[in-house]
Length: 620
Picture (spheres, one colour):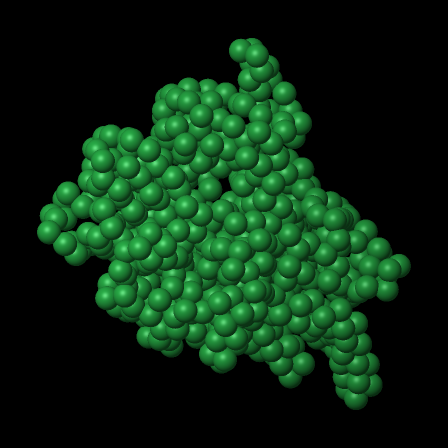
């Protein structure tokens, strides 16, 4: 196994003895010596001593780390499987089964080597994220560029991002144009355009252009640092299944040693065949080793989280992977979750003797200087350079008043129109109106574009066993119904304040998953059985959530749900197969004449098969 400090795999004991460096020459040498002991070439008079010497040397080479760990476990009163292996090997030598004793420790170490290889591969999938955070940055000061530690860069500093370099801190582009490779963060292969005003996140890779950015977050608060912190925390969180097996392992080993001793004593006393029942008890001891359970189950969860990370999804622990797999109700926020959050003009409704095109042109002129999202959407829909008004004034929480070629233009809500004497009592509901010289001229309605994958997400989740999907939003019922129709969710709850959204979520029942992105979603993310945040845009949401979808495409949610279910199936199969195989060999050992070789298979063979089964998750 890989070296770690403490209980890294959830089996309840330390694996310090299992550190491997380089090629396992000790195991190769032990294997050669064991095979040499089995050759039928030694004279009968010397065969006993030659086999004892060869097998003894094999045991010392392969078993020394095991014996050392067993001694530590006895000293710490935390008995583990190394104690079982040590007792079995020494007892086998005591009754003259030298080859069987050597085989026990050799195959135990080989099983650990296989598990170590699979775990290292799993860790590489997650640890590769460490490469997304550069340690240095190019700081721009007074037209000079100097290399400084990234952690020393202050918020608001200017950084240069050379072509093909990683972005060290979050920021916004001040000058330059390029493309950004976001695959390390989101799993998406298509590059994004980056021009003046484009937000960038640490960990993204710049394309061929030179960019200058102004930092918007400190090193520790930037996207890459937050991802790494969450991954490190996730590795320490174990699922209920892992915790149960860890508790099981702590009482299992001493119980098994006691049961093996009881088998030996009772059987020998009743039959008088001391050697026979010692062999049976050894087979019982080896077959009952819990390695397959305590190693393959944590590995499966770790591999599942590693496979999810490759897809741009961070799962903060095995518990949340379980919840993601079993959730029967998925609730979604609307803006920023099912929709992109970017407003577009959906409809222009003339209210007077004016064309829709002319109304849009006048509204764009009126909103020339405004940075309100609705004003930006109007200008974008006007498609072209619109002249500046002769004069304009932005009214807080109202809209804009402008003078254009002697005309008074009002662009805002009903409150603004009423404030300037325009009759708005008969107007249909709309967020923005245009009034020209005191007469309502047009109404504008807006929509948010659906996020990629949102249209199919409800049906995909239902194919994976989800019973219902729900939309929870603070928007109007009409806006919510449009999005619900496009995404085919089952239930819609609109005009909800954050407290209302939380209350509605808690009344849904079952195992709930909530998907959101904003600060107002934080209570619901924390209250759900599994909270799922979109991206890293809102720190409060990403910290409250249990799962982070870094990809823009919601299809990743359905894919990671399927991955979580596959992980649980593999865990269940490993537990069932391990227990069944061991039970069969244990009965054989007590009631029949099971050889130690069969017990070795029930231990190391089952371990190898369950580890290989768990490692299938790494091929995602």
